[in-house]
Image 1: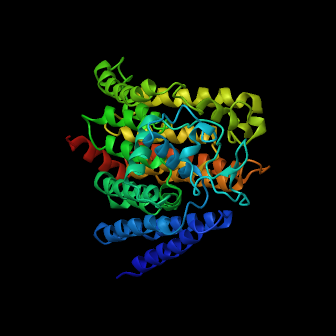
Image 2: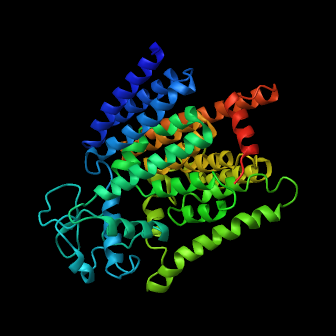
Image 3: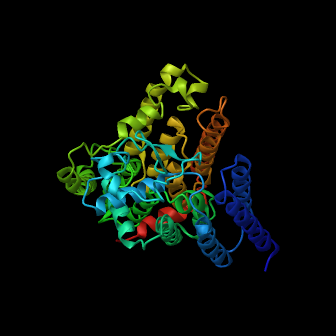
Length: 451
């Protein structure tokens, strides 16, 4: 065994120890930064290892690291409690969009786990009529789209009595492993390490069991096929709205010479049908709008008033706060137009990465799990420079919205700079006819891939 292999394995063992610490208690910024430093060190040490030796380290390391998220209850997010509640409500034959958890009409569905009798813990949310709950925002209806709701119902049916959060976490682990195996097949083992060893996977996909993992799996599967791509991407959008960015990637190059209507319709019609069919049962069963708390959430996150929070952090470094929302929309529209006109149709995941990563860099959300999609796409495309987006999101979440000045601003700015430098370096290589070997392999494999 080579010394470099030993060092890379040692970095992964240290990363595993830090991940256990991260999921075992309240989030600490120092632990997050240490985890990402070890992740970067492992990638660097493994950069020249032969793929034959690297395969076991990536696959086994990824499976074990993800499993560490099962070691404790959700450590830094309460979203999974809402998932469990939505599944329970649906199993009772009630639409999750019709009633907030605090509604007395749903009182018969409450139990000691989600609605504890003792309300001393700080992470509990008060109920208007007295009492408390683990479910965040208990006075508003659910925000989650229909494919996510179907997943919550499935998990409820599969959960034995007393399982609580465990089946949701197991579902996150299973999906994380499936994404790892798909990336190993589609992008190669070296690129799959970006996903396998990323600290966001055991923490956000498994321990906190975020439903974003379902959307990521659907997007990765979509880019591994052709015929079912539109339907899978539509299902991803109906699981978590953010994957709409992947649709633009799938349409890469459709405006290169006029409008490639056959490609546009071949992708968008199945995607629209998948979204429509997913929403239809809930529209028919619900008395309330199926958008749920979406608009209220956007107001809560201060996307309309950036001066009150940390949104648009990078843009606000170079322009007045009041300009930032309009500039973000304009720049994102230009990025989408560039992908539609100049994107490579043989590498649609690259366009998806550019659009989804740009969205997060422009709007700078304060939630680290939003970047799980970017991590998967960065692995698929072999573009390590985009991983900084996930780190910036983690720093923003741990620091919190009240931090002024927030360290997230510097992290998002550094992530943006890394992406721009990576783009400039790759452009210069392309101009000189020296494409990086990984990009060349992607193009060759994409050209030869058949459904």
